[in-house]
Image (cartoon, rainbow, N blue to C red; front, side, top):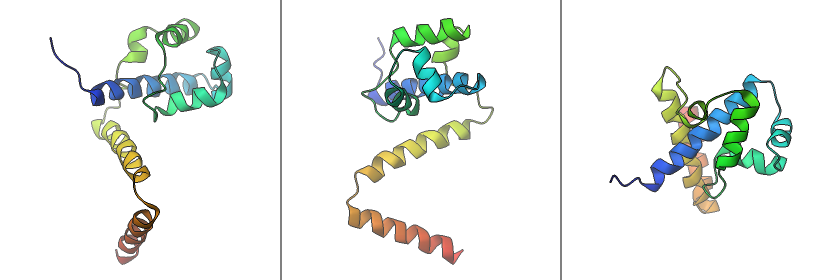
Length: 124
C-alpha cells in the first residue's frame, strides 16, 4: 500500500476548494449565496473556499450536496482543475507556501523582507 503524505492530502483538498469556487463563479453566485445553498456559515464557507486552513475542509456531505445542486459529478469536484498550463497551478501552490512561511516570520524579519523586495523592484 502506498503512503500519502500530508502535503499531498492538503493539495487534494485545495483542488476541491478551487473546483467548488469555479463552480460557484460559473453560476454567478456570491460566497454568501453559495454558503446558504450548502447550509453553512458564510465566513466558514469563505475559509473553506480559500483552502488556507488544513483544519477546515469541505466534508463529503457538502461535496455531494454541491454535486446535486449543480449537476456535476464528484470527479469534477475532486479532480485537479485543468488549466492548460501547469505553471498556473504551481504558482497558486507556491503562493500558499509563501503565505504560510510569511506568517511564521517575526515583524522585524517581515519588514526587512518587505524593504528588500522594494529595493529589488526599484533597482530594476
